[in-house]
Amino acid sequence: MAVVFDKPHALIDVPLHYCPGCTHGIVHRLVAEVIDELGIEGRTIGIAPVGCSVMAYNYFNCDMIEAAHGRAPAVATGVKRADPENNIVFTYQGDGDLASIGMAETVHAAARNENITIIFINNAIYGMTGGQMAPTSLPGQVTQTSPYGRDPKLCGYPIKVCEMLSELEGPEYLERVTVNSVPHIRAAKKAIKKAFQNQLDGKGFSLIEVVSSCPTNWGMTPQAALQWIEDKMLPYYPLGVYKDRSAEKEAE
Image (cartoon, rainbow, N blue to C red; front, side, top):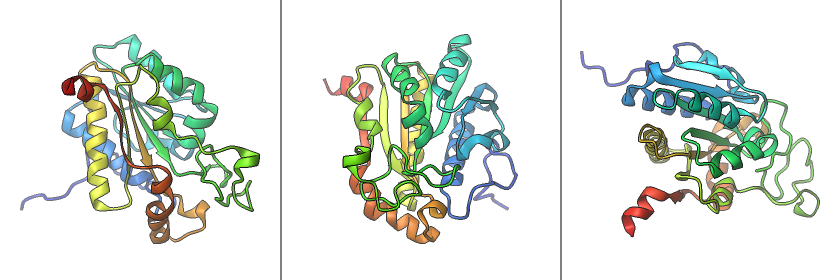
């Protein structure tokens, strides 16, 4: 019998701890599929900091390292530089981690064009700690710490990570994707694979921002949360490639 669907070897066959409808599981699978297809499981080291992905070490078959909150790019830099010819290093970070406490590490790793891959989950809220406003929470978005909606006059505007990093000379590749539909999932996998391939080719810093859902802390059903991505998040966080130095060179 032909096998038409199977779990990636790079993903351990255990139940995930994520809430029903959470899109972390989808992104985990995409990362694992890419690791399998590139044949790099034995060389790959994942860095998981604090956040909903804090226990990602339970799910990936590759080596995993736990980092302090926000410090994954710094840890990844050290791991990659320790053995740059062999180590394939990725971080898996949420918006509260990457765009708040870890913003300095993110910006400077990008500015140095460190040859690492960053998977950035943007669900516009602090998930693990109970639904507080995040750096990426939308204007007017209701959270535990903005019960009347985020007011830019009081809290500032959301941080658009891809747009901000695209102004730096360092990064090799920045793309924003989402996983709220099958076509979008396929496009997300293509971007993630390119980010890992860039590292294999020694091109430098690649960050894939995945616009994601958090049904529990948004107070929605999984179906409504996926639609909310389409209706509310994507107009504010447009999908697309924000920097691709290789493509720019080819176009010259």
